[in-house]
Image (cartoon, one colour):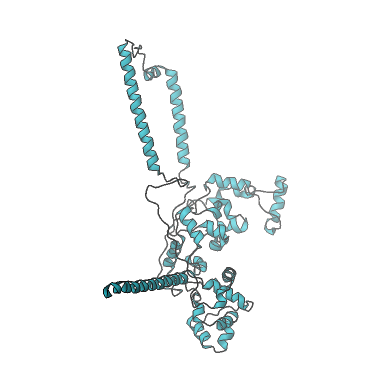
Length: 444
């Protein structure tokens, strides 16, 4: 009787312990998930109750030039800053860091010395609530990278139908094969039926001259054919020779991908910010990588939407291309400094005039005021830069014939303008009227 009572007693305790253990593990899991998906326990209550959306706007307009949330930049990374510093101290530091340093505050002086004594801008216009909003945005957990789930090979679907292209093509092939067999059997049956009833299957026709023999005997047709052949050869040869050296549409893949669509289009960066020598030199010049680093010291990653668009539409990983830039310039993102170990970038030239043709960018850009798009096309829409115009002699001459000279309010052209007005009896002149068609202008 005693043994029969022990088993339920032990079983009862075993179930109780299991229930408690399951409850504990469930609670621990929920807690871990809550911490991973939300703010950490170190974030103050005033920050938790603030608006991260407003904080993002303030951060991008005031802080993003020097700081990043999860990486060091000109200043330290700001994520978990509320764990490292007191809120009252942060209010004072953000509003006027120099005043806090001059007061002898140990944290302020240590931070100032640690970051090469680079002075932080003062933001006295920010209220405590504005700072709370910025910190709410800064303390958001780092988003996990999205991993794209690859579809099984050969499982291309349309509208979620789930039928692969291979299956559809296979079914069509089977149908065509069955139809071919049916047609063969029908034809064979009809032939047997005709033979059984004495019906002739094919009627013998008298054989005439082959067409090539009749053509060879007709001298007029031969003469006309020869004339057409010679004209076709001349036309084809002329068209081929006229394309020699013309690289219109040439768009090589560069060692570091550069999107004019993003820089000149979306960000509206002026062409001559990068190609500054076009104003004063014969050549537009290849921008040095230092020009790129003016912005990309801070821009180490593009927005998630831009990154996704680049991979989907153009097959380009923009973040990887920025890393190529860092490798070429020797930029160390962890220390925010140059290592001195640089690598040359072997850019591929796109526009290349013959050596006997002279073209001066400054004369066209600074003197004539011609827009870059006139010769280079809508570069602000190009993901990959290409040669827009043919750059042939005829193309240049036609431009000189049509382009009018702006002589108004230009003392240099006053005397010439008067003489030409009297000579031609017109008020407006083209480049051709000013000698733009003289051979020595472009060939010397």
